[in-house]
Length: 112
Length: 115
Image (cartoon, rainbow over all chains, first blue to last red):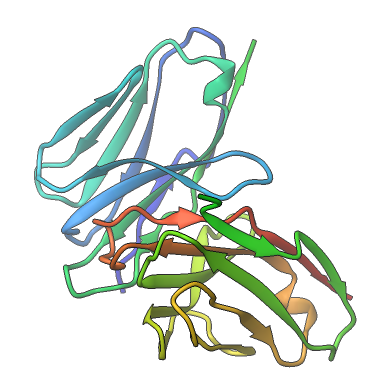
């Protein structure tokens, strides 16, 4: 059974600080996605990474897919209160698989 | 486009009652799915559909039924509600459903409490 473990489960920091959250597995994934979920809403896709070692940037957010495609990280530079939310990673096992493997999420709070 | 819509937004049921959660999308997506989200457990797939007339079970299908008679609609039926089904339910759709490749578009969720 493929699993995705996210750490930390909860993170509360001050505005302006940097942070990194992790998504780890012992299994190889063909691709990995990061979603952000705000209270009372459904998750919204931030990024998809498909190549080992791939780095993608979305403004102050930097996403990296591990070289072996077993892990990923999300780094936020100079966090802002608008970054507050639940960050979820989800992995795809293959092109013919319709079932995403989801991590439990990292709840991030950015205090003004 | 309205995207993915879900009704109702909140629902309280008594044990043993049945109900249908509605989901509709206007993006002409072939793939639709239902998830439940519980604290600390992430999203768990209940059922999914890769097109009208085709459905399949996900990770936690027991106690739920689905059907897909049109591309737009994918209702989720709770047959006999149990307290363990208290959760937030999300409907999602994507173009072709390729896990980890296609963008999943989520509805706003239905918050269900079973007493």
